[in-house]
Length: 556
Ligand code: ATP
Ligand code: MG
Ligand code: MG
Image 1 (spheres, rainbow, N blue to C red):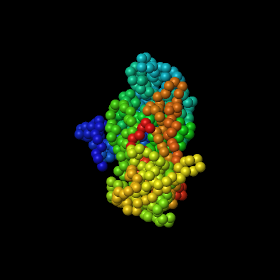
Image 2 (image 1 turned 120 degrees about the vertical axis):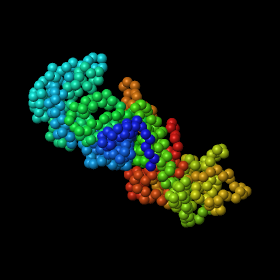
Image 3 (image 1 turned 60 degrees about the horizontal axis):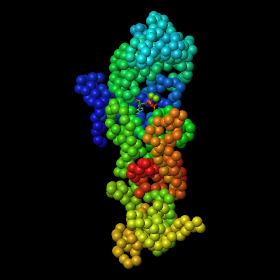
Image 4 (image 1 turned 180 degrees about the vertical axis):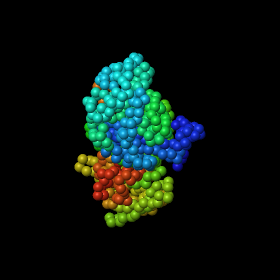
Protein backbone atom coordinates (compact mmCIF):
# COMPACT_ATOMS: atom_id res chain seq x y z
CA UNK A 1 0.00 0.00 0.00
CA UNK A 2 1.22 3.49 -0.85
CA UNK A 3 2.54 5.52 2.03
CA UNK A 4 0.10 8.14 3.27
CA UNK A 5 1.06 11.64 2.12
CA UNK A 6 2.56 13.85 4.79
CA UNK A 7 0.61 16.68 6.33
CA UNK A 8 1.08 19.29 9.01
CA UNK A 9 -0.04 16.91 11.76
CA UNK A 10 2.42 14.24 10.70
CA UNK A 11 5.10 16.92 10.68
CA UNK A 12 4.22 17.83 14.27
CA UNK A 13 4.42 14.18 15.26
CA UNK A 14 7.77 13.76 13.49
CA UNK A 15 9.08 16.72 15.41
CA UNK A 16 7.71 15.45 18.73
CA UNK A 17 9.32 12.08 18.14
CA UNK A 18 12.63 13.71 17.22
CA UNK A 19 12.47 15.66 20.48
CA UNK A 20 11.71 12.51 22.43
CA UNK A 21 8.30 13.75 23.60
CA UNK A 22 5.74 11.31 25.07
CA UNK A 23 8.48 8.68 25.42
CA UNK A 24 8.18 8.09 21.71
CA UNK A 25 4.53 7.06 21.94
CA UNK A 26 1.87 8.10 19.44
CA UNK A 27 -1.66 7.55 20.70
CA UNK A 28 -4.69 9.03 18.94
CA UNK A 29 -8.41 8.53 19.38
CA UNK A 30 -11.58 8.71 17.34
CA UNK A 31 -14.31 10.12 19.59
CA UNK A 32 -17.80 9.93 18.05
CA UNK A 33 -20.86 11.00 19.94
CA UNK A 34 -23.30 8.08 19.64
CA UNK A 35 -26.16 10.22 18.38
CA UNK A 36 -26.23 9.18 14.73
CA UNK A 37 -24.54 7.11 12.07
CA UNK A 38 -21.06 7.90 10.82
CA UNK A 39 -20.78 9.82 7.56
CA UNK A 40 -18.07 10.56 5.02
CA UNK A 41 -16.83 13.46 7.15
CA UNK A 42 -16.19 11.07 10.02
CA UNK A 43 -14.28 8.85 7.59
CA UNK A 44 -11.79 11.68 7.15
CA UNK A 45 -11.23 11.79 10.90
CA UNK A 46 -11.09 7.99 11.15
CA UNK A 47 -8.55 7.67 8.34
CA UNK A 48 -6.46 10.43 9.90
CA UNK A 49 -6.48 9.07 13.45
CA UNK A 50 -6.18 5.38 12.67
CA UNK A 51 -3.86 6.06 9.73
CA UNK A 52 -1.42 7.95 11.97
CA UNK A 53 -1.49 5.22 14.60
CA UNK A 54 -0.81 2.61 11.90
CA UNK A 55 2.08 4.37 10.27
CA UNK A 56 3.81 5.33 13.54
CA UNK A 57 3.34 1.95 15.16
CA UNK A 58 1.11 3.65 17.71
CA UNK A 59 -2.43 3.07 18.89
CA UNK A 60 -5.80 4.59 18.14
CA UNK A 61 -8.62 4.34 20.64
CA UNK A 62 -12.32 4.27 19.85
CA UNK A 63 -14.04 6.30 22.53
CA UNK A 64 -17.70 7.14 22.59
CA UNK A 65 -18.18 10.68 23.80
CA UNK A 66 -21.32 9.92 25.71
CA UNK A 67 -21.55 12.81 28.14
CA UNK A 68 -25.02 13.71 26.99
CA UNK A 69 -27.49 11.32 28.66
CA UNK A 70 -30.43 12.25 26.44
CA UNK A 71 -29.33 11.30 23.00
CA UNK A 72 -27.34 8.12 22.90
CA UNK A 73 -28.69 4.89 21.58
CA UNK A 74 -27.33 1.38 21.30
CA UNK A 75 -28.17 1.27 17.62
CA UNK A 76 -25.71 4.09 17.00
CA UNK A 77 -22.96 2.49 19.06
CA UNK A 78 -23.36 -0.76 17.17
CA UNK A 79 -23.35 0.91 13.76
CA UNK A 80 -20.32 3.07 14.56
CA UNK A 81 -18.22 0.06 15.59
CA UNK A 82 -19.31 -1.82 12.49
CA UNK A 83 -18.46 1.09 10.19
CA UNK A 84 -14.99 1.60 11.66
CA UNK A 85 -14.24 -2.09 11.19
CA UNK A 86 -15.68 -2.07 7.70
CA UNK A 87 -13.26 0.71 6.77
CA UNK A 88 -10.56 -1.74 7.81
CA UNK A 89 -9.44 -0.27 11.12
CA UNK A 90 -9.14 -1.88 14.52
CA UNK A 91 -9.06 0.18 17.69
CA UNK A 92 -6.46 -0.57 20.34
CA UNK A 93 -7.83 -2.14 23.51
CA UNK A 94 -11.48 -2.20 24.44
CA UNK A 95 -14.15 0.12 23.12
CA UNK A 96 -14.08 3.02 25.56
CA UNK A 97 -16.77 5.36 26.78
CA UNK A 98 -16.26 8.79 28.28
CA UNK A 99 -18.83 7.61 30.84
CA UNK A 100 -16.27 5.00 31.98
CA UNK A 101 -14.47 7.95 33.55
CA UNK A 102 -17.36 9.57 35.41
CA UNK A 103 -15.92 8.53 38.80
CA UNK A 104 -12.44 9.77 37.95
CA UNK A 105 -13.79 12.96 36.39
CA UNK A 106 -15.75 13.64 39.55
CA UNK A 107 -12.56 13.24 41.60
CA UNK A 108 -10.67 15.54 39.24
CA UNK A 109 -13.42 18.14 39.63
CA UNK A 110 -13.11 17.87 43.41
CA UNK A 111 -9.36 18.32 43.10
CA UNK A 112 -9.91 21.53 41.09
CA UNK A 113 -12.25 22.80 43.81
CA UNK A 114 -9.58 22.08 46.42
CA UNK A 115 -7.07 24.14 44.41
CA UNK A 116 -9.53 27.03 44.32
CA UNK A 117 -9.95 26.51 40.57
CA UNK A 118 -13.64 25.58 40.49
CA UNK A 119 -16.78 26.76 42.26
CA UNK A 120 -20.46 26.00 42.47
CA UNK A 121 -22.63 28.70 40.98
CA UNK A 122 -26.23 28.77 42.14
CA UNK A 123 -27.34 31.58 39.87
CA UNK A 124 -29.99 30.80 37.29
CA UNK A 125 -28.80 29.70 33.83
CA UNK A 126 -30.12 33.01 32.46
CA UNK A 127 -28.11 35.03 34.97
CA UNK A 128 -25.00 33.06 34.19
CA UNK A 129 -25.44 33.57 30.47
CA UNK A 130 -26.10 37.26 30.92
CA UNK A 131 -23.01 37.81 33.07
CA UNK A 132 -20.78 35.89 30.70
CA UNK A 133 -20.99 38.84 28.29
CA UNK A 134 -20.24 38.52 24.62
CA UNK A 135 -17.59 39.39 22.06
CA UNK A 136 -17.90 43.10 22.76
CA UNK A 137 -18.84 43.08 26.44
CA UNK A 138 -16.52 41.69 29.10
CA UNK A 139 -17.94 39.20 31.57
CA UNK A 140 -18.74 39.97 35.19
CA UNK A 141 -17.84 37.83 38.13
CA UNK A 142 -20.51 35.70 39.70
CA UNK A 143 -21.37 36.61 43.28
CA UNK A 144 -20.56 32.97 44.10
CA UNK A 145 -17.09 33.05 42.60
CA UNK A 146 -15.37 33.48 45.95
CA UNK A 147 -17.10 30.81 47.96
CA UNK A 148 -14.76 28.94 50.25
CA UNK A 149 -13.31 25.59 49.22
CA UNK A 150 -15.29 23.90 52.02
CA UNK A 151 -18.53 25.43 50.87
CA UNK A 152 -17.86 24.45 47.25
CA UNK A 153 -17.00 20.88 48.24
CA UNK A 154 -20.23 20.60 50.20
CA UNK A 155 -22.36 22.14 47.43
CA UNK A 156 -20.79 19.95 44.73
CA UNK A 157 -21.52 16.88 46.88
CA UNK A 158 -25.10 18.15 47.20
CA UNK A 159 -25.33 18.44 43.42
CA UNK A 160 -24.18 14.84 43.12
CA UNK A 161 -26.54 13.72 45.89
CA UNK A 162 -29.60 15.05 44.09
CA UNK A 163 -30.26 17.89 46.53
CA UNK A 164 -30.83 20.46 43.77
CA UNK A 165 -33.32 20.83 40.99
CA UNK A 166 -32.16 20.75 37.40
CA UNK A 167 -30.68 24.12 36.51
CA UNK A 168 -30.34 25.21 40.16
CA UNK A 169 -26.56 24.78 40.34
CA UNK A 170 -23.54 24.20 38.13
CA UNK A 171 -19.85 23.67 38.74
CA UNK A 172 -17.72 26.25 36.95
CA UNK A 173 -14.01 26.57 36.35
CA UNK A 174 -12.54 29.66 37.96
CA UNK A 175 -10.50 31.13 35.13
CA UNK A 176 -11.04 34.66 33.84
CA UNK A 177 -14.30 36.51 33.25
CA UNK A 178 -12.35 39.21 31.36
CA UNK A 179 -10.86 36.81 28.84
CA UNK A 180 -11.47 37.75 25.21
CA UNK A 181 -12.12 34.04 24.66
CA UNK A 182 -15.68 33.31 25.85
CA UNK A 183 -14.75 29.69 26.52
CA UNK A 184 -12.40 30.90 29.25
CA UNK A 185 -15.01 32.94 31.12
CA UNK A 186 -15.51 30.48 33.93
CA UNK A 187 -16.97 27.71 31.76
CA UNK A 188 -19.47 25.27 33.19
CA UNK A 189 -17.85 21.91 34.01
CA UNK A 190 -20.84 20.03 35.45
CA UNK A 191 -24.58 20.43 35.16
CA UNK A 192 -27.56 18.68 36.69
CA UNK A 193 -29.55 16.38 34.41
CA UNK A 194 -32.03 14.01 36.01
CA UNK A 195 -31.87 11.54 33.21
CA UNK A 196 -30.78 7.93 33.12
CA UNK A 197 -27.64 7.30 31.08
CA UNK A 198 -27.38 4.31 28.79
CA UNK A 199 -24.07 3.22 30.33
CA UNK A 200 -24.32 4.38 33.95
CA UNK A 201 -28.06 4.11 34.48
CA UNK A 202 -29.39 6.15 37.41
CA UNK A 203 -26.06 6.48 39.15
CA UNK A 204 -25.58 10.15 38.31
CA UNK A 205 -27.75 13.22 38.29
CA UNK A 206 -24.80 15.44 37.40
CA UNK A 207 -23.03 15.10 34.10
CA UNK A 208 -19.68 16.57 33.02
CA UNK A 209 -19.63 18.94 30.06
CA UNK A 210 -17.94 17.94 26.83
CA UNK A 211 -15.24 20.59 27.24
CA UNK A 212 -14.32 19.15 30.64
CA UNK A 213 -14.67 15.51 29.71
CA UNK A 214 -12.79 15.49 26.45
CA UNK A 215 -9.34 16.74 27.48
CA UNK A 216 -9.40 14.79 30.71
CA UNK A 217 -10.50 11.57 29.00
CA UNK A 218 -7.61 12.12 26.59
CA UNK A 219 -5.24 12.58 29.53
CA UNK A 220 -6.61 9.54 31.38
CA UNK A 221 -6.11 7.36 28.30
CA UNK A 222 -2.61 8.63 27.58
CA UNK A 223 -3.61 10.15 24.25
CA UNK A 224 -0.66 12.08 22.84
CA UNK A 225 -2.21 13.88 19.87
CA UNK A 226 -5.88 14.79 20.10
CA UNK A 227 -7.03 15.66 16.60
CA UNK A 228 -10.27 17.55 16.12
CA UNK A 229 -11.94 19.87 13.67
CA UNK A 230 -11.35 23.60 13.48
CA UNK A 231 -14.45 24.67 15.36
CA UNK A 232 -12.66 23.49 18.52
CA UNK A 233 -9.76 25.86 18.03
CA UNK A 234 -11.29 28.36 20.47
CA UNK A 235 -11.66 25.58 23.02
CA UNK A 236 -7.96 24.74 22.99
CA UNK A 237 -7.01 27.24 25.74
CA UNK A 238 -9.54 25.53 28.01
CA UNK A 239 -8.23 22.11 26.95
CA UNK A 240 -4.72 23.21 27.89
CA UNK A 241 -5.86 24.86 31.12
CA UNK A 242 -7.55 21.67 32.30
CA UNK A 243 -4.70 19.36 31.32
CA UNK A 244 -2.28 21.66 33.09
CA UNK A 245 -4.29 22.02 36.28
CA UNK A 246 -5.14 18.41 36.99
CA UNK A 247 -2.55 16.02 38.32
CA UNK A 248 -2.35 13.39 35.63
CA UNK A 249 0.93 12.10 34.26
CA UNK A 250 0.10 12.52 30.57
CA UNK A 251 -0.35 15.82 28.80
CA UNK A 252 -2.14 15.40 25.51
CA UNK A 253 -2.11 18.20 22.97
CA UNK A 254 -4.98 19.20 20.73
CA UNK A 255 -4.52 19.95 17.01
CA UNK A 256 -7.26 21.13 14.70
CA UNK A 257 -7.80 20.37 11.03
CA UNK A 258 -10.45 21.47 8.52
CA UNK A 259 -13.57 19.35 8.35
CA UNK A 260 -14.60 17.69 5.15
CA UNK A 261 -17.36 19.51 3.35
CA UNK A 262 -18.87 17.80 0.34
CA UNK A 263 -21.26 19.46 -2.08
CA UNK A 264 -24.64 18.07 -3.19
CA UNK A 265 -25.17 16.46 0.20
CA UNK A 266 -25.51 17.19 3.90
CA UNK A 267 -23.27 15.81 6.63
CA UNK A 268 -24.81 17.29 9.71
CA UNK A 269 -26.21 14.53 11.89
CA UNK A 270 -29.19 16.68 12.70
CA UNK A 271 -30.12 16.99 9.04
CA UNK A 272 -29.37 13.36 8.30
CA UNK A 273 -31.59 12.33 11.18
CA UNK A 274 -34.40 14.53 9.88
CA UNK A 275 -34.15 12.92 6.42
CA UNK A 276 -34.40 9.51 8.05
CA UNK A 277 -37.07 10.32 10.63
CA UNK A 278 -39.35 12.07 8.13
CA UNK A 279 -38.98 9.29 5.60
CA UNK A 280 -37.34 11.31 2.83
CA UNK A 281 -34.94 8.39 2.56
CA UNK A 282 -35.23 4.75 3.49
CA UNK A 283 -33.25 4.61 6.75
CA UNK A 284 -29.70 5.55 7.75
CA UNK A 285 -28.25 3.17 5.17
CA UNK A 286 -30.22 4.54 2.25
CA UNK A 287 -27.79 4.40 -0.69
CA UNK A 288 -28.31 8.12 -1.35
CA UNK A 289 -26.98 9.20 2.04
CA UNK A 290 -23.34 10.08 2.68
CA UNK A 291 -23.39 7.84 5.75
CA UNK A 292 -20.81 5.06 5.67
CA UNK A 293 -23.56 2.48 5.81
CA UNK A 294 -25.36 4.23 2.95
CA UNK A 295 -22.20 4.40 0.85
CA UNK A 296 -21.58 0.75 1.64
CA UNK A 297 -25.05 -0.20 0.48
CA UNK A 298 -24.57 1.96 -2.57
CA UNK A 299 -21.56 -0.20 -3.50
CA UNK A 300 -18.64 1.88 -2.26
CA UNK A 301 -15.62 -0.09 -1.16
CA UNK A 302 -13.62 0.67 1.98
CA UNK A 303 -10.54 1.05 -0.24
CA UNK A 304 -12.25 3.74 -2.32
CA UNK A 305 -13.25 5.71 0.77
CA UNK A 306 -9.81 5.42 2.35
CA UNK A 307 -8.18 6.46 -0.86
CA UNK A 308 -10.53 9.42 -1.16
CA UNK A 309 -9.75 10.52 2.41
CA UNK A 310 -6.00 10.13 1.99
CA UNK A 311 -6.01 12.20 -1.17
CA UNK A 312 -8.02 14.98 0.48
CA UNK A 313 -5.01 15.90 2.49
CA UNK A 314 -5.16 17.44 5.94
CA UNK A 315 -4.95 21.16 6.33
CA UNK A 316 -6.36 24.06 8.28
CA UNK A 317 -8.02 25.63 5.25
CA UNK A 318 -11.75 25.15 4.88
CA UNK A 319 -12.87 24.00 1.45
CA UNK A 320 -15.74 22.23 -0.26
CA UNK A 321 -14.91 19.01 -2.07
CA UNK A 322 -16.80 18.21 -5.24
CA UNK A 323 -19.02 15.15 -5.09
CA UNK A 324 -17.54 14.01 -8.39
CA UNK A 325 -14.22 13.40 -6.61
CA UNK A 326 -15.86 10.94 -4.25
CA UNK A 327 -17.65 9.31 -7.18
CA UNK A 328 -14.39 9.06 -9.10
CA UNK A 329 -12.77 7.25 -6.17
CA UNK A 330 -15.23 4.38 -6.32
CA UNK A 331 -15.35 4.39 -10.12
CA UNK A 332 -11.57 3.94 -10.28
CA UNK A 333 -11.61 1.16 -7.74
CA UNK A 334 -14.45 -0.72 -9.40
CA UNK A 335 -13.02 -0.16 -12.85
CA UNK A 336 -9.93 -2.06 -11.74
CA UNK A 337 -11.55 -4.66 -9.55
CA UNK A 338 -15.20 -5.28 -10.37
CA UNK A 339 -16.09 -8.33 -12.44
CA UNK A 340 -17.97 -7.52 -15.62
CA UNK A 341 -21.48 -8.70 -16.36
CA UNK A 342 -24.29 -8.11 -18.82
CA UNK A 343 -27.54 -6.65 -17.61
CA UNK A 344 -30.26 -5.37 -19.90
CA UNK A 345 -32.08 -2.55 -18.17
CA UNK A 346 -34.87 -1.92 -20.71
CA UNK A 347 -35.34 -5.23 -22.49
CA UNK A 348 -36.35 -5.52 -26.12
CA UNK A 349 -36.71 -9.02 -27.49
CA UNK A 350 -34.55 -10.04 -30.41
CA UNK A 351 -35.28 -13.30 -32.26
CA UNK A 352 -32.49 -14.89 -34.30
CA UNK A 353 -34.53 -16.52 -37.04
CA UNK A 354 -31.80 -18.77 -38.45
CA UNK A 355 -30.88 -20.10 -34.95
CA UNK A 356 -32.45 -23.48 -34.15
CA UNK A 357 -35.23 -23.40 -31.51
CA UNK A 358 -33.51 -25.46 -28.84
CA UNK A 359 -29.89 -24.73 -29.51
CA UNK A 360 -28.01 -23.29 -26.57
CA UNK A 361 -24.39 -22.27 -27.07
CA UNK A 362 -22.20 -21.36 -24.12
CA UNK A 363 -19.85 -18.54 -25.00
CA UNK A 364 -16.71 -17.56 -23.11
CA UNK A 365 -16.22 -14.00 -21.99
CA UNK A 366 -13.52 -12.46 -19.81
CA UNK A 367 -14.50 -11.56 -16.25
CA UNK A 368 -12.35 -8.45 -16.73
CA UNK A 369 -11.10 -7.54 -20.20
CA UNK A 370 -7.95 -5.87 -18.82
CA UNK A 371 -7.15 -8.52 -16.24
CA UNK A 372 -6.80 -12.08 -17.47
CA UNK A 373 -6.14 -13.33 -13.94
CA UNK A 374 -9.79 -12.81 -13.13
CA UNK A 375 -10.64 -15.66 -15.49
CA UNK A 376 -13.59 -16.20 -17.74
CA UNK A 377 -17.32 -16.35 -17.41
CA UNK A 378 -19.73 -18.32 -19.59
CA UNK A 379 -22.94 -17.09 -21.12
CA UNK A 380 -25.58 -19.03 -23.01
CA UNK A 381 -26.71 -17.74 -26.38
CA UNK A 382 -30.18 -18.83 -27.40
CA UNK A 383 -32.56 -18.08 -30.24
CA UNK A 384 -34.24 -15.34 -28.24
CA UNK A 385 -32.21 -12.73 -26.44
CA UNK A 386 -32.86 -9.35 -24.88
CA UNK A 387 -31.07 -6.24 -25.91
CA UNK A 388 -31.59 -2.76 -24.53
CA UNK A 389 -34.31 -0.67 -26.16
CA UNK A 390 -31.77 2.12 -26.42
CA UNK A 391 -29.64 -0.11 -28.63
CA UNK A 392 -32.13 -0.40 -31.49
CA UNK A 393 -33.50 2.12 -33.94
CA UNK A 394 -35.42 1.73 -37.13
CA UNK A 395 -33.36 4.45 -38.70
CA UNK A 396 -30.30 6.35 -37.60
CA UNK A 397 -27.43 8.39 -38.99
CA UNK A 398 -23.98 6.89 -39.16
CA UNK A 399 -22.94 8.14 -35.74
CA UNK A 400 -25.27 5.65 -34.11
CA UNK A 401 -23.07 2.66 -33.25
CA UNK A 402 -25.86 0.28 -32.35
CA UNK A 403 -28.41 -1.85 -34.14
CA UNK A 404 -30.46 -0.29 -36.94
CA UNK A 405 -32.99 -2.04 -39.13
CA UNK A 406 -31.12 -3.54 -42.09
CA UNK A 407 -27.72 -3.09 -40.42
CA UNK A 408 -25.48 -5.23 -38.30
CA UNK A 409 -23.85 -5.29 -34.86
CA UNK A 410 -21.93 -7.87 -32.91
CA UNK A 411 -23.58 -9.38 -29.88
CA UNK A 412 -20.58 -8.86 -27.58
CA UNK A 413 -18.52 -12.05 -27.17
CA UNK A 414 -20.83 -13.71 -29.73
CA UNK A 415 -21.85 -13.47 -33.33
CA UNK A 416 -22.61 -10.70 -35.76
CA UNK A 417 -26.34 -10.25 -36.33
CA UNK A 418 -28.35 -8.26 -38.85
CA UNK A 419 -31.75 -6.73 -38.07
CA UNK A 420 -34.21 -7.91 -40.71
CA UNK A 421 -37.66 -6.96 -39.49
CA UNK A 422 -39.65 -5.61 -36.59
CA UNK A 423 -42.87 -6.66 -34.87
CA UNK A 424 -45.17 -4.07 -33.35
CA UNK A 425 -47.96 -4.34 -30.84
CA UNK A 426 -51.44 -2.86 -31.30
CA UNK A 427 -50.19 0.56 -30.18
CA UNK A 428 -47.45 0.54 -32.76
CA UNK A 429 -44.69 0.04 -30.25
CA UNK A 430 -41.82 -2.20 -31.32
CA UNK A 431 -41.96 -5.40 -29.28
CA UNK A 432 -39.58 -7.62 -31.19
CA UNK A 433 -36.69 -7.37 -33.61
CA UNK A 434 -36.29 -10.28 -36.05
CA UNK A 435 -32.76 -10.83 -37.19
CA UNK A 436 -30.29 -13.28 -38.70
CA UNK A 437 -26.84 -14.25 -37.48
CA UNK A 438 -23.70 -15.00 -39.40
CA UNK A 439 -22.29 -18.34 -38.11
CA UNK A 440 -18.81 -17.51 -39.37
CA UNK A 441 -18.26 -14.51 -37.07
CA UNK A 442 -17.49 -15.93 -33.64
CA UNK A 443 -14.22 -14.29 -32.61
CA UNK A 444 -13.58 -13.08 -36.15
CA UNK A 445 -14.70 -10.36 -38.47
CA UNK A 446 -17.27 -11.11 -41.14
CA UNK A 447 -16.17 -11.46 -44.74
CA UNK A 448 -17.64 -8.56 -46.71
CA UNK A 449 -20.46 -9.81 -48.87
CA UNK A 450 -23.18 -8.57 -51.15
CA UNK A 451 -26.46 -7.55 -49.58
CA UNK A 452 -25.13 -7.14 -46.05
CA UNK A 453 -26.00 -4.17 -43.92
CA UNK A 454 -23.52 -1.77 -42.42
CA UNK A 455 -21.50 -3.01 -39.41
CA UNK A 456 -22.18 -0.48 -36.67
CA UNK A 457 -20.88 -1.61 -33.31
CA UNK A 458 -21.04 -4.05 -30.44
CA UNK A 459 -23.92 -4.35 -27.98
CA UNK A 460 -24.59 -6.37 -24.85
CA UNK A 461 -27.40 -8.89 -24.54
CA UNK A 462 -28.81 -11.58 -22.28
CA UNK A 463 -30.44 -14.89 -23.21
CA UNK A 464 -34.21 -14.57 -22.89
CA UNK A 465 -34.55 -18.16 -21.66
CA UNK A 466 -31.63 -18.22 -19.29
CA UNK A 467 -31.37 -14.63 -18.10
CA UNK A 468 -32.46 -13.76 -14.56
CA UNK A 469 -35.17 -11.20 -14.00
CA UNK A 470 -34.04 -8.49 -11.63
CA UNK A 471 -34.82 -5.06 -10.23
CA UNK A 472 -32.40 -2.21 -10.72
CA UNK A 473 -32.40 0.89 -8.56
CA UNK A 474 -30.90 3.86 -10.31
CA UNK A 475 -29.63 6.17 -7.61
CA UNK A 476 -28.60 9.68 -8.21
CA UNK A 477 -27.55 12.59 -6.05
CA UNK A 478 -29.98 13.23 -3.23
CA UNK A 479 -29.85 17.00 -3.67
CA UNK A 480 -30.04 18.99 -6.84
CA UNK A 481 -28.18 22.03 -5.55
CA UNK A 482 -24.51 22.20 -4.70
CA UNK A 483 -25.11 23.63 -1.25
CA UNK A 484 -28.46 22.21 -0.14
CA UNK A 485 -28.21 23.76 3.32
CA UNK A 486 -28.15 27.23 1.85
CA UNK A 487 -31.79 28.24 1.71
CA UNK A 488 -33.81 31.43 1.62
CA UNK A 489 -35.79 32.59 4.62
CA UNK A 490 -38.74 30.28 5.21
CA UNK A 491 -37.34 27.47 3.07
CA UNK A 492 -35.78 24.23 4.12
CA UNK A 493 -32.89 22.15 2.82
CA UNK A 494 -35.58 19.53 2.15
CA UNK A 495 -36.82 21.73 -0.70
CA UNK A 496 -33.56 20.98 -2.51
CA UNK A 497 -34.06 17.23 -2.65
CA UNK A 498 -33.63 15.86 -6.16
CA UNK A 499 -37.01 14.31 -7.11
CA UNK A 500 -35.18 11.92 -9.45
CA UNK A 501 -32.72 10.66 -6.87
CA UNK A 502 -34.19 7.16 -7.20
CA UNK A 503 -35.68 5.48 -10.24
CA UNK A 504 -36.64 1.84 -9.87
CA UNK A 505 -36.56 -0.36 -12.97
CA UNK A 506 -38.48 -3.62 -12.82
CA UNK A 507 -38.15 -6.38 -15.35
CA UNK A 508 -34.46 -6.00 -16.06
CA UNK A 509 -32.53 -9.11 -17.06
CA UNK A 510 -29.05 -10.08 -15.93
CA UNK A 511 -26.78 -12.87 -17.15
CA UNK A 512 -27.37 -16.19 -15.38
CA UNK A 513 -23.90 -16.45 -13.86
CA UNK A 514 -24.96 -13.91 -11.21
CA UNK A 515 -27.61 -16.20 -9.76
CA UNK A 516 -25.73 -16.72 -6.49
CA UNK A 517 -24.21 -13.27 -6.13
CA UNK A 518 -24.61 -12.26 -2.50
CA UNK A 519 -25.40 -8.83 -1.07
CA UNK A 520 -22.67 -6.26 -1.67
CA UNK A 521 -21.21 -8.16 -4.65
CA UNK A 522 -20.12 -5.47 -7.06
CA UNK A 523 -20.11 -5.55 -10.86
CA UNK A 524 -19.57 -3.43 -13.84
CA UNK A 525 -22.62 -3.91 -16.01
CA UNK A 526 -20.92 -3.46 -19.35
CA UNK A 527 -21.90 -0.24 -21.09
CA UNK A 528 -24.16 0.71 -18.14
CA UNK A 529 -22.19 1.48 -15.01
CA UNK A 530 -21.24 0.01 -11.66
CA UNK A 531 -23.82 -1.87 -9.62
CA UNK A 532 -23.98 -3.94 -6.47
CA UNK A 533 -26.37 -6.50 -5.11
CA UNK A 534 -28.75 -5.08 -2.53
CA UNK A 535 -29.71 -6.99 0.58
CA UNK A 536 -33.36 -6.79 -0.52
CA UNK A 537 -32.59 -9.58 -3.02
CA UNK A 538 -34.63 -12.70 -2.23
CA UNK A 539 -34.67 -16.21 -3.64
CA UNK A 540 -32.91 -15.63 -6.90
CA UNK A 541 -34.73 -12.39 -7.50
CA UNK A 542 -31.84 -10.02 -7.48
CA UNK A 543 -31.98 -6.32 -6.69
CA UNK A 544 -29.11 -4.15 -7.87
CA UNK A 545 -28.16 -0.64 -6.80
CA UNK A 546 -26.36 1.64 -9.19
CA UNK A 547 -23.23 2.82 -7.44
CA UNK A 548 -22.04 5.23 -10.10
CA UNK A 549 -22.11 5.59 -13.88
CA UNK A 550 -19.26 4.62 -16.17
CA UNK A 551 -18.14 8.21 -16.47
CA UNK A 552 -18.89 11.49 -14.84
CA UNK A 553 -22.31 12.68 -15.89
CA UNK A 554 -23.49 15.59 -13.76
CA UNK A 555 -25.48 17.61 -14.60
CA UNK A 556 -27.56 15.24 -16.66
P1 ATP B 1 -22.21 16.66 13.60
O1 ATP B 1 -21.80 18.09 13.62
O2 ATP B 1 -22.70 16.17 12.31
O3 ATP B 1 -23.08 16.31 14.77
P2 ATP B 1 -19.95 15.90 15.09
O4 ATP B 1 -18.66 16.53 14.73
O5 ATP B 1 -20.65 16.46 16.25
O6 ATP B 1 -20.86 15.86 13.81
P3 ATP B 1 -18.98 13.58 16.38
O7 ATP B 1 -19.63 12.29 16.56
O8 ATP B 1 -18.76 14.42 17.58
O9 ATP B 1 -19.81 14.36 15.28
O10 ATP B 1 -17.62 13.43 15.56
C1 ATP B 1 -16.62 12.51 15.88
C2 ATP B 1 -15.33 12.98 15.27
O11 ATP B 1 -15.46 13.09 13.87
C3 ATP B 1 -14.93 14.34 15.80
O12 ATP B 1 -13.54 14.30 16.11
C4 ATP B 1 -15.23 15.26 14.67
O13 ATP B 1 -14.38 16.35 14.67
C5 ATP B 1 -15.03 14.36 13.45
N1 ATP B 1 -15.83 14.82 12.34
C6 ATP B 1 -17.17 14.98 12.30
N2 ATP B 1 -17.56 15.49 11.13
C7 ATP B 1 -16.45 15.68 10.40
C8 ATP B 1 -16.17 16.20 9.10
N3 ATP B 1 -17.16 16.64 8.31
N4 ATP B 1 -14.89 16.22 8.68
C9 ATP B 1 -13.90 15.78 9.45
N5 ATP B 1 -14.08 15.29 10.69
C10 ATP B 1 -15.33 15.25 11.17
MG1 MG C 1 -19.85 16.18 18.41
MG1 MG D 1 -22.49 17.51 16.94
